[in-house]
Image (tube, rainbow, N blue to C red):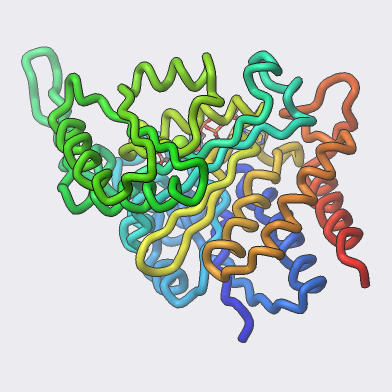
Length: 360
Ligand SMILES: NC(=O)c1ccc[n+]([C@@H]2O[C@H](COP(=O)([O-])OP(=O)(O)OC[C@H]3O[C@@H](n4cnc5c(N)ncnc54)[C@H](O)[C@@H]3O)[C@@H](O)[C@H]2O)c1
Ligand SMILES: CC(C)[C@H](C(=O)O)[C@@H](O)C(=O)O
Ligand SMILES: [Mg+2]
């Protein structure tokens, strides 16, 4: 049976990078005799323009009927003044909630050929290989929001809510992952200030009893943000709530040289959702210069986590390493010595590398 992949190209650079991910999946399919069917569905700003809804019912239906979902990015200045529920981002959040993908895995790997491309020192970055496990369907993103008049103008409220159950399931997943890596887990919170973080920390301590072989450390989020830049190699798996994970993962992207490099997998009970961590990059959209590696590596995560195709995932990841080692770079990473390539040229190079790795 062919695997049904729902594609959500979205806005800005989304369609440009999505085209490269599809090329790569087709190449893997050809080499390994795997069949895919692709269904492209509207989401975000383009869906608002066409259907007046950032997550139209037919999109949600299509996602639920698919075997896995690949999203590029949503958002852009055109929709920034829309009311909250009619913003592109509202469609993305509603989709995550509807699919129940509470666990967002964001691996951060410093590729050797890119060490010089970061604004940080090479010796700090060498061999960084960590994983941020971000809670994705709770916290301040999903709590009640309100506005009311105030003597100074208005008062706005966002509510940060977590239940023991929501914390426990993500923390348990992080412990299992940590057990299969270096057996080191940092739980990131703000327990010195936030009640939700105090519940988070208590729950982590309870769950930790079931994983005595995993070393578990608590770290406050402000210190964690600093330590990620000071000495990132001290971390292996980090687990944290929704907004802290969002911010820390953009910060951690600079350990790789570009936010365009980071993939992610969002997992839960049903279908898996795969997306690069970056946004729609309106400043470079339509120029053919966006880095497609984040979405290509997300496609690799899809093959591994949704279909259990480890070899196929690894071949994509090895091809990315190889192409980078040969000096090809999109504009976000290119230095004077490098060969600067466009979005589609980068996709072609990965496809070629896949072809060369498999003896026919
Ligand atoms: N998952 C998502 O769909 C997602 C994630 C983050 C932001 N957004 C949305 O994207 C829009 C723009 O947000 P932003 O500018 O804060 O963040 P962004 O991640 O889109 O861009 C930040 C910077 O990184 C660069 N960049 C991002 N991805 C890149 C890539 N693949 N290759 C090369 N350079 C890349 C951009 O050019 C920009 O300079 C907003 O509407 C925001 O809400 C969407
Ligand atoms: C666009 C936005 C809602 C989203 C988030 O905050 O989760 C993005 O920043 C991300 O990291 O996927
Ligand atoms: Mg983000």
